[in-house]
Image (cartoon, one colour):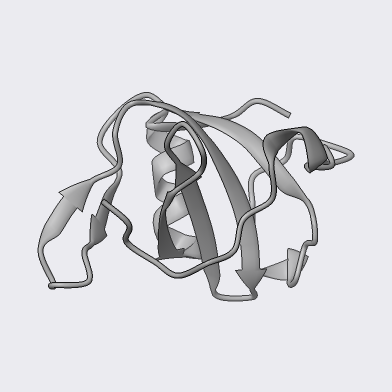
Length: 101
């Protein structure tokens, strides 16, 4: 199921971040994508407004602006959800989202 109309890069074209510090509002328009893994519940709202969970497994995390982060998942990166930075930080703090690079 496609949740957003974002255009996403192939994982081989993604540049790794210089450090693995948590995402934060101070890193506005961080042009780096981070390889990550969903290890617990991370909720998002579907286009129809339903509360769904991003499936467990690999994903990419990219900060879009000072307030939102895109989480991309699926074999070809065909699924995505935009989440507030605070929700992504909370998922990191609980261990539900682990940055790998």
